[in-house]
Image (cartoon, rainbow, N blue to C red; front, side, top):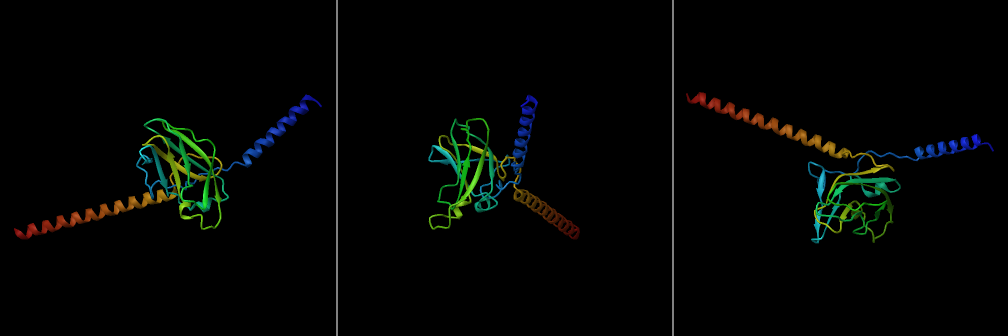
Length: 212
C-alpha cells in the first residue's frame, strides 16, 4: 500500500480518537461543597484542620449540599488547595470512618504537601454498599481530610463536582444565596437602626422644645 494511503489512515484514526476523547469529556461546574455551612471557612475561603493527637491534622466536613447517595453512578471530581506550614506531610481524603453505606472511592495520586500551597484533583466514585445494619447512611455524608505527620494543615477552595474534568473553584449556589440573605439582613438591620436613631432624635427635639 502507498505511503499516502497509510498517512491518510493514520490521520483518520487520530481524528476518530480525538472525537472519542471529546465525546467522553464531561465538564463539571456546579460546586456541591459548601464553604459557609457546618464547618465554615474563613473570609479567604481557608480552613485550618483540627489538631489530631498532637501529631497530625484531621477534620470531618459535613458540608456537601447533597447526600452522598446522590452521587452513586456518577463520575465526580474533588479539587482543593492545601498547605502544611510546619513541614512536609502526606494528605489523605476519604469518608470511610463510621462504616458509611455510601463509600467514597478515590483514584489518582494525592501529592504530599509542605509550606507552599499545592493544588490537588482527585477522581471520585461512590459505591452503595447495600442496606445493612452494618452500614450507616448518616456517616456517609462527609469528606474527611487527614494530614498524618503535621499539625496546622490548611485547605482552601474545595470543590466537589460531577464530571471527569475539574473546573476552577466557584462557590456553591447555596453559599451565594446565603450571602445574599446575609447582606439583606444587614441592610434591614441598618435601616431599622437608622429609623430608631431618627425617632430618638425627634423625641429629644420635642422634649427640648416642650421644656422651653
